Image 1 (cartoon, rainbow, N blue to C red):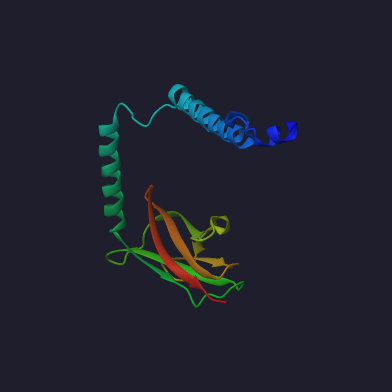
Image 2 (image 1 turned 120 degrees about the vertical axis):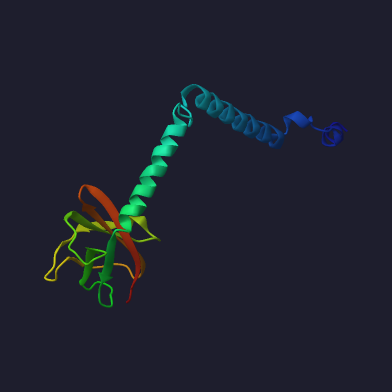
Length: 169
């Protein structure tokens, strides 16, 4: 009879391992959230700056200045069909609207792989045989779409010109 009584006797709900587990999980989540909120209140410097309006005005002026400067130049990328793991010569020419040579101080070719940032790299470009033309020899180790960007420093101002290319197998 004693055994019958213990099997029919109900356990207290708060002694169940499932209830205890859920309560511990809830307490942990709440504790972590409270900790993160306290950290953000005490240590986060915030996104608002005192001179936000002036900074916005300066940013807009710089963007318009860059766009205006980019329109002064006529540019062109030249390359043959690009194959995987084979050296390719990429040429970049830049002149002003009248066809005069640009006074280039420095030029770098940046190559970006949109699907894998670890493959990104850059290479300096050198003067080619043609007038106003710069070249770089590049070997691609991944097929597919790549973005190329020529970053040119002219008269102390950096201008950037980009193009998307496709590397064949």
